[in-house]
Image (cartoon, rainbow, N blue to C red; front, top):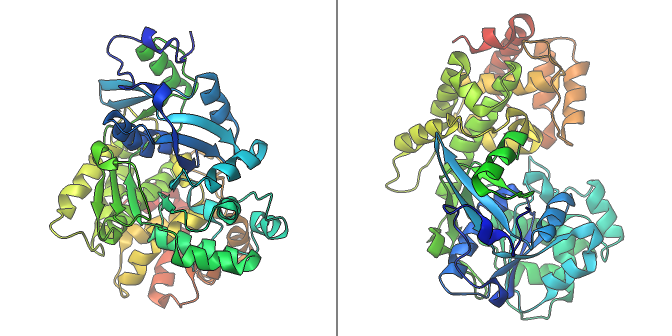
Length: 481
């Protein structure tokens, strides 16, 4: 049987069911980006608020890019399961907070109508860094982006996240309070979204831009949970644990964290019921997590791909890559300004333990995608902050990424290719170079990723040496510190 409202009571006895009457849920929150991360993270915090008795916060989930998840959820009465795994221990629950799910290109009027509905005071977003159509080096609007060009010409039938938000805001009654909560891995993510949305609105409707700047609440946030993409293995495990087919099933780690700037325009779910931390300043949490978790994750991904290692746990179990990951984290830790009273060393050790969780099939290829969006915020600030000091592991990670972009092969001979719409221009520079030093100079001059401020010549020389080592000796030679 498939998981539905009718069959969920047939789930195995140890599966936790929604602890409330779903028929009493009303629409209260729109979420853009209905992927696994949201359903294993923000949706669970909202589920906790609903379980505490506040049934106003049913989630309207919107997928901007793919129809599979909305279709799967609709067939299951919008129910899905989350299994938390660490080692041999696992727990499974069925989540009921989602009340509608749409694929935006097929339900654009409904999506814009929900965003315009004054009865919905909160919008949350997990659309990945590239979903905001920003230039990585400046975080300004990329007006050359194909979706942005389309939306500027056709603002009533938008494709982009910014275009969809703006279309809803244009139809929303003035004065209806709205908080848009960005949950993607960008420094000052709420501030960045406000700037990008205002820049977009300025080009189609200047009064709307003023509303974005002056009336909307866009709190900054930090989110943390490792949620791999589903695999045949994880789906089979859920079938065994649930006793029901679940086409939207998620398997993730037990750890979860959400830090939110306490800055809202109107009512919101009591996310504290699920353990969220509301604070006046999210920035130290953001910087720590972006560099130590996400930065080290990216380094593991590129090193793992070069060594032919498919998962993060495989990479951490490899003596060379595991030691390399520890070194990268130490390099990043040296520039982190942690929240007051926070034990960064203990946090770093806990992260390394989480990366070793072999119960999760977190693919290195998945993490390696979209490097032109991720590297500028995960690695480059630490290299800039080093004031010329050598950061050997982090510099090797950067060389490994450039080597991958250059179209080289892994140590096992596999061609390296990652999904990254921003990569072709940088890759072309690397491939056109006649030597490793020329390749590094060409890369560092690519303003869209590396910015316009010059990089120190000693750093460029070290990167060229690392590229030569990779080209001649492979990843094992680079990682043999």
